[in-house]
Length: 383
Image (cartoon, rainbow, N blue to C red; front, side, top):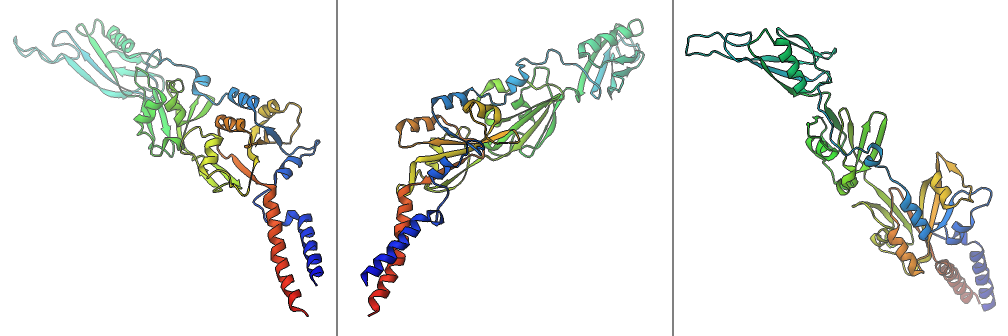
């Protein structure tokens, strides 16, 4: 009867071996990933990471405030605009003039100045000063406005002098808003204010910096950067111009690790610039008795232009201007560990560690043992 046991067991083992695809698995095997690419219909690019690949990645230019706006100087002039509120004070050299009180006696001098009520610059860009009429002020500095007032009052007031102060500026301000800050309309100072200055004036950020992105819009141009880029690179902290809009966005960054890793999970970024080496270490590395060190993959959507640089001869399927790219790592090669140290993880990357072939063999053996043992017991019972 032992022949029957051997026959049944070998049949089960052969069936299990022929149907490995029905065995439990955390994902595709290395063979399945590397062979499911018809030449005429590539669903994804399979790229071996090497020094050339890292060099191409380093040549990519990320979005940049400095590169797009490229102005590291403060505004050349601080001018008044429509909607600003001005305060005008006029002095005269002696009492008894248009803007000064009368002389009471020989010892009294009377008031020699007069403050004109604050007024907003009208749509036509002008304000009104008594005895001077409508004065155009839009596009002029306060010193130019002061001189215009004095010239208009010459011959009417007693040696007049004028001081013009912008008490509230709308045209020389930037708007800050977003879920990571309190938001405000921030007046810009004549010395010039940088992006971080304006965000600080609006109350700063309320969440960790590595979760924050800053979007700067100027005219028809808009660029978004991680907050940490602003903090780490002074060239990105450009001067803000009037009417700029700054949106502070909270967008926690994550990457996913699954397969034969120590702790497959979704991992949040806690800093800018996590490398593949650090990413694998954060999930406990590879599982010794399951993982295939030559089957470590990183999956990412890349722009078509960059995918063409990686594989000029390939014609993968495109989706909305992007191509599915799978970067392959062979962790058995010590040099790949150094390459992993230079490969930076991006938001929404997926890292997959394939099962080793021996792991599937162990599963087949387990199936064999679980089925053969009851059969052997039954045969032993039957006389």
